Image (cartoon, rainbow, N blue to C red):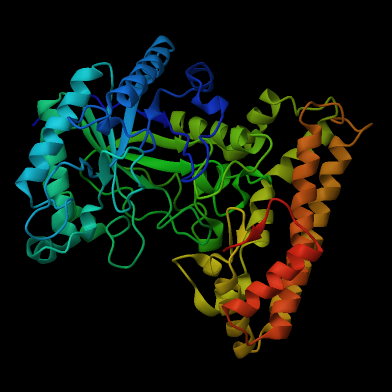
Length: 512
């Protein structure tokens, strides 16, 4: 057994969105990350396709340019004292690799697949010797950025052997082989990101995950990373019950601009939830960083910005910075008081007024932004009917889109249950709540007020105005949807598009 001292890492990763330009962000600048307390950063991810660059059939002009850029990012990272990582979809394979007789090219039972993957991975580590290690995603596969390689989801293989061992057996083979390739042969660290949706997954299932990780060889350079939430970054999500299970060193993942919750366009303080557990699940004070950490805690995998399927929406990263500060602070001391962390950030952001009363009121307002978002985005009336764990409130709104099929499902269910008035009242109360929050922001940040000259004042006010506008707009939308129920997806879509045409709510749109 190899024993090493486990250091609490704080890894930064900016998650670009598929089909959109790469996010231009200070959170990709090693100097900023080092100053904010990060220890590691992802210098290239699946959209870079680093594992494709050394394949025999690679386009030399493209690969050489990308490798030179990666050299520069690694050097910049090292110069700031940060450790660089590359992240890649599993599997990323050459199109020249022949298909197996049965199953898919991404079959974990194929020796040819693992031979090719071993050669490619070790070539990558040899070409970039200063990498700290590799991070592997699996369970979904984004399109390869290069036409000489394809990505494959190993869980999608339908060969007889994979069908026989199932998802747990597939992950066992992944754990065993990656541990050998990256840690033993490559002498680097390896992080396997676990994530899935559904009752048959392993991300939040203690027994299935323990079985899946049973092939770990006790090398502490091999780590796993799990989201703090039981499924994805929604509210009404219990703390992931596998976080404190034994096994490989474990990182906890946090998303600072929540993709289901306005992606940084409105204030959304997450420090209290992360510290003490989700109150809406009845867990406050029982879970969270202060109460439930891994036995072999390796650190934090933090997404300062990005995630989801939309392009960059917020005009400023102020609210992302607020949550980055919380994540890093909890990484340094998981028992710290979240209100103290928020006040510390407010001072660093220049939000401490000469009037102690103004500062205290603003702190209360920002603390309450978590509940504001809970009311804006989720539907308590519908949740009482369904108690959904997967996609709470049917994902009726996410990123920058309204989802018409989900809206129709909710409207029909609420109507059939006879609780239309409850949902209408809920949305009216949400509008009133958003108005009170806007009033509080205006008392601090309008011209002539204590923070009216702050360089972020306009963005703060725009954020709260957007939250209030969204509340008013969606209150009217739900009144229309409920009045039209029962309705199908196309009818809901027509209502949403008509409202957007008559009363635009940029940058929001209806899902195609």
